[in-house]
Length: 309
Image: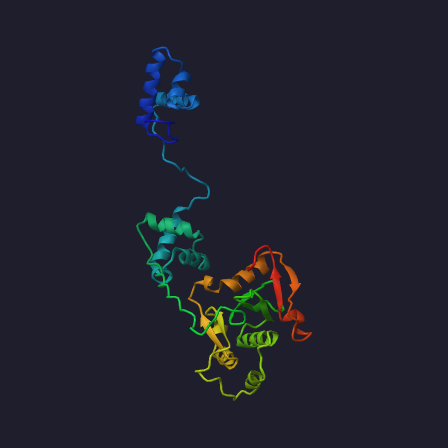
């Protein structure tokens, strides 16, 4: 043994150390000098002396009887839940919540997992889905403003009138292009959002406006190069058929990110994080809004904060 004595040693090591102390003190050393050489606190050595006299040098098992410990019937009921619902829930978290829903036992997920492990039981679990490969951007896409847009939705639960917010940002320019607040998250909100964004950026040409106004109008030819690429996740509003037809009529191509991978839409996720978690400073965009009524709601503003989103 070299260096200070560890915090936990077994009874044999304690007996050996106490023997060295007894031999050194018998040879004329002081108790404090011996403990300093051994790297052992004097109070700890005296405590070991008392425990050796009582025959309790070995440490007792940790624990005891905590007042918040599980009772026997709670352990038995947890095992019963495993027998009845284990094949369905397949997770210790779901199993613990199942017991509270049924009014049979109230234990935390970690306690349920510990009880099952103590009985040699294991839930099958839900296999993790394989990570989908990243889809590259189209060859026609260029890294320039108004060529790459990213859009998504979020919620403001305390806003009862319209708690769902949709926004479009420019990937290259980092510009907050348009916003749509609504109480009903559906494809209509997505279509209004894109119409405002195109109008605000001056991309809503007469041909596109006429095509949007006519429900029976033919979409652009598939061989035509789209005006821009819209990046989004796989939400129901993004995957809706009405949204796909409207976006195609706007000469816009859609690009969906990988499931369960929010970093694929980091630009819009960062914007929502700034708005919801920080205190940004607003400044008007150099580009004037298309109309007075869209000056505030359309969101043609830039977000200035400590870091650029």
